[in-house]
Length: 145
Image (cartoon, rainbow, N blue to C red; front, side, top):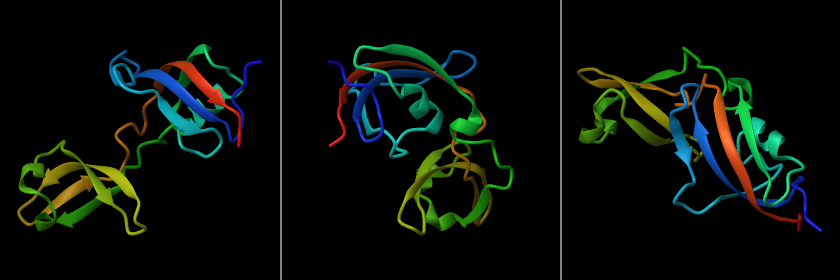
C-alpha cells in the first residue's frame, strides 16, 4: 500500500520552478531529487501544503502566491555595510551573496549599490514578491519514524 505524504514523512520530489513569465528559476533536472521532512518547514509553506496527501508517482502543478512563499518585497529591508566586508569581485550591483546572520543562520543578500566606503544590500529573498509555479513529481515517501 502506498504511503501518503503526512507530517513527519521523509519525502523526495523532483520539480521545476518557473515564474509568471515561464522562465525556469530552479529545477532538480540533472540533479538528485530534493529530500525534506514534511511538516518541518524545510520547504515553502504553499508547496508543503499542496503536497500533503500525495503518494510516490503522483504529479501536480502548484501555484504558490508570495504570501505562501517568500513573502512580499519589504522596501525597508536594506542595510549599509562597510565596503571592506566584501570580496572585491562582489562589488557589483546585482551580485548575490550568502551572509551569516547574528544567530548563525545564513541568508541570501543582493548588492544594490556600491558607494565610496560602503555597500547597500537588499535583504529581501530574491524570490520575494513573486508568484511561483512548480511542476512537481513525488519520487518517494517514507513513513514517519
